[in-house]
Image 1 (cartoon, one colour):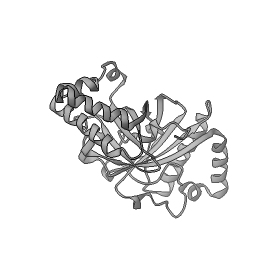
Image 2: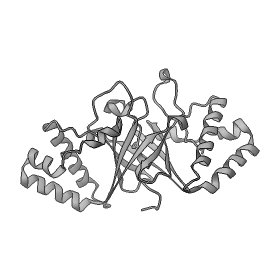
Image 3: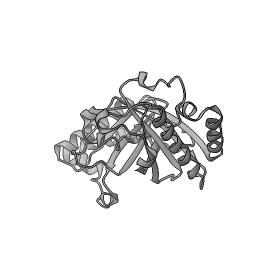
Image 4: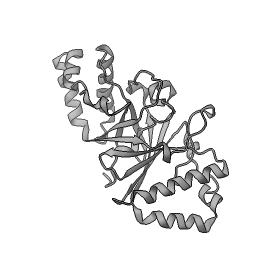
Length: 274
């Protein structure tokens, strides 16, 4: 895989997505795709990226654009990783605007200087698009307040085994519903730029939620389906999953641009205006 940390590239949204007025709380509220731009910065150079993000917000506000994003920063994992996340319903929504908002607002010279100030701080950039999979998700009950943290699990699968892997995840969902397990999640499957990485995104309403350990999957599957079926499913997992990476991200609303509450779902351009 690429050297850039994959976990916060999803928030799932990933990544992901939890900040969009609690959109992760109901599967029917989820747009079709999540697009994420992940940027890693050198240690101690976070201020440069954050300054550019603030200018991007200012520029888009100034020109009145309809491009919005939510920003997350990893707090457990690679803490120099930022993700700029959009939710869209079609690839047509990913088409860049005719003119970069930063250039339009500040002029070519000042826009170039802003980019020159940012460039030395950036160590890696990656983008990807994932499809929301309500058929393989088990969303949490709705709450009055949006989540403040995003727990992300990136599962890198062996090429050619996606069908078997999805059977395994589907069975976890079936077992969780059957036993009324406290497990809940949103699952995203790779589309473009995501390789074979599936994203499992779990919204959290505070660090205290992490004090309660989740049910162990082998025990959950055995209780729901019996030992023989649980053994078969765990064998599928061992044969299809190459790598597991986890992280915890905080939602940086100060570096996000979101529409007014009456403007509907988020969409639009990435924070860099590319």
